[in-house]
Length: 79
Length: 458
Image (tube, rainbow over all chains, first blue to last red):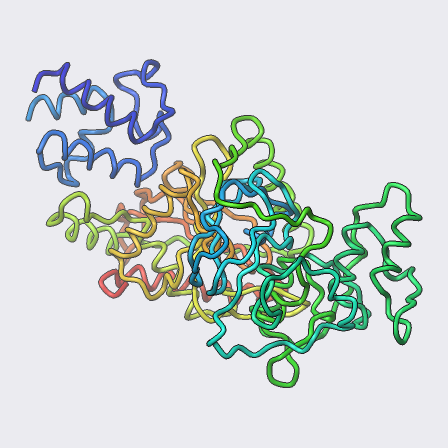
């Protein structure tokens, strides 16, 4: 997966999880949970969607990789 | 119109999901009701055949207004209440009925505000309430000086711009079941005016529901087949009414409930370690979040310390049998809802997790069911995801306690004479001092902490 594909995928997933989120104003290094006000259930849903779309197993130990947009892109594109 | 929470005064019928002639069961969703806070799926509290839909789509009516009539199955031998006093005044109040009267009962109890004199029928009370007539100032012309509907309406005619304020509520010491008391409190029904059919004439839930017949004055008309749903309030309207509803209820809580607060720091090392091991093997859809452990511990502890689980009604504490855990759910547009997870102490963690997720999704989508909004016996607020360390809540009346969990954070902790870094969470309890003392609250938090040290038993 290219970084652009990964970004697109993540943004799509975030739109599903937090429909009112302002993704355009999201800094690549901002903490997703804090900036978008995601709670633990929202985050779990995000992981679910990403798992379903990529087929990649995302373990709990991988959650820190999904902290920011930049790290999440790197994580998904790298796998 | 059911009271979907203690903060609701009126509701709007958004949609009818049944039509006359339909069979309904207890718990079936029969209508969608818009409240100040959200659209809610209203469940039927009885089984039978829908006779009439009395309130049309788009109409806003006060809590207690009869929305529809449902005829109970004839075969079902239900105890019929003794006729409300005085019976002859009750007759003309009911809408035209196609079937024999004993087989039906009104869907919901109108909100007759309290008046100490039991000789006045609930119906008259209701009418007086609607017309803003103070019953205490009325001279009855009925049998044995009872106040009749005509008396009330005469008085109302003489009153320009009838005040909507109901007569002040007098405390009653009527024998009643806790559930009946709670329902009566929610609906603003004076138990003194309700004829009890339970042991020793005690008032049961069904008696409260039956206490007042069909609403008078509302245009009683067949709504016909379900029509297009009316629009729920939206945007700024919703935000405003939400703040107002929260404001009224919380102001009442702070006015009436002498809160006391206790807090405890709970070591989460075992709980998180166990959770992590468990989740490691599971697909993401089956993973648990730490909040589930906190909720389960809160529910189990409420069962062990029953003095914090129940309602303060009529100057006394009524313990609730089961633990229905209210969950504070913040909505994306602002505001919050507190639906309950029924029998939370009896649910396995996976089931609790799935119910919590479901509840959050439906709360945000505006698809909660009426019993979920009315049945909570104790409420939990979990602000951990918002990053605060601890939260001391405001109790939802008539409940007597609110449990708060903050963020799980790593902190230096002394263990066995050494300083270690461990994940901890601040558990707090705001409780009603009328129902319990801080000693009880402390015991409750100690239970929560103990339970979280043995996560495999949760």
